[in-house]
Amino acid sequence: MKKGFLILASVILLTACSSDTTQKDNQDKSDKEKEQTKQISTGMQISSDYYRTLLPFKVSAARGLTQDNMISSYNSEAFESGLLDISKQTFSPDDYLYRDGQFLDKDTVRAYLAPKYTKAEIKDMSDDEKEQNNARENLGLNPTHKGETDPEKIAENSPTYLSHIIEQDYFTESDAKKQKISGMTIGLAMNSEYVYQKEEYGETYTKKLDNKEVEKKGKEMAEEILSRLRVRDDLKNIPINFGIFIQSGEGDIKPGKFVSFASSEGGKRNVKSWEKMNQKYVTIPSNDAADLDENLNSNFEQFNQDLQKYFPNFTQSVGTGKFDDDKLTELEIKVPLDYYGKAEVIGVTQYVADLSQKYFKGIDDLEISIVDGEEPQALITKTKDDDEPQIHIYK
Image (cartoon, rainbow, N blue to C red):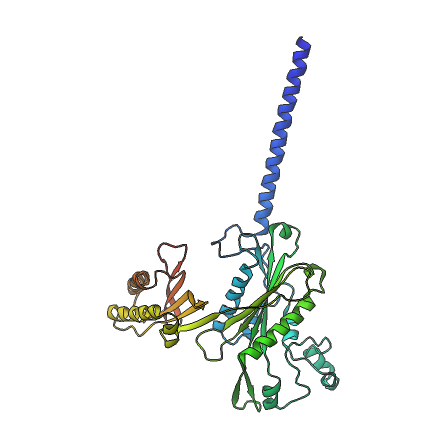
């Protein structure tokens, strides 16, 4: 009897030890998985509207070209942020990690932005010119000049439509652990005008381009880029999005806009039907703004009047509103201020924040910059998740 009891006690003890060991192993495994998750992405997600970044951080393989190729900072900011919004329709920030594009490097992007060369043009080039123009690969997506050298005829028959390309890469956490890309978005920045000179150092001329023709060319270029990407084994079976952005012209103080987007499902070699985007950026106050939202335009005018009463030296603030499907989704305001001291900046900032609650309370994405010339003095922001404006005074 005692022997049986000892055997039973031993079994219970071993089972308990085994259970403890299993629980410990499971806990260790869970901790290890959590640690791996921490290692592959940034731990903090600002909000559900923002992507966490894949680690280790890598700069874009084409870094620096955006500033060189885009007409203005207004265009480049709207292009990049708008492309992220397009990506969210396929790659939810809750499920995907983000990394700047790693497949289209500087040389590739430059080659894509070149004009297509004819055989005769390549034959007439020196070896150095062939190297400089990437003519041997001849990957240019812009129209061929067919040997034409007259700037006016080039402007008329074969202007530069494509100005820049941006790539954004997306990863699920499981794919990220395997260093395997899950999806991609490609943005094509198109020109709304072609700027040229008839002679070196001479007068500059501008030819307005037809937006419908620009969009058509962009769609054709997207198809060609897709066919080139699908050649790679690691890009054959992932979804790839495309967005077409038409830039505003030189001197415009508002950006251009996205006009259409489309997706190509994993394994497909063609782009699905394109969807139109009804997007506008307008200066506020203005007649264009009043046509879209008369109440907003009136509130902005009253906002300026109240600032004028509070601050006699105040001139006038100007806003840029982003409208999607004729509904305001973002508002950026720049308030000019002659700097006379930190206490004055604080006072004005608090007053502007109060006015923002009075006139712009229902806006989901609001940003107000208080500046002295180009020097930022204070920043007021408010998102749909904020009950009150967030204020930052620059030191």
